[in-house]
Length: 140
Image (cartoon, rainbow, N blue to C red; front, top):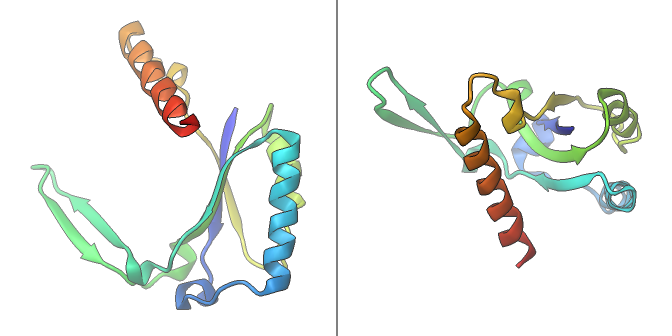
């Protein structure tokens, strides 16, 4: 099972404040532990919403771009981990070890092609081919 662990933004992250040397060291050690355990698929921090944008689509599929920053800091994402684990309980164990002093993370299971019960076998196979291609590109 794959889970995305979403790190919620804070006022500091939205100001663009970078983590301290100590925080970076703690996060690096934690990420190294995830790698050694073979559960880390990806981990990234995000720039503040002031450098981002949102795209809104209407019923006619017209797109409107809204530039950041965005007002509700508690609704924003500052970073994420993508973990491959065997269960919800395992991802919770890993997240409890994260080197945070304050803040909040959200844990969401990632859909697999097989989770879409309305998908045809051809659609599932096409999705699996795309994922294999992406994995191959990342190795190159």
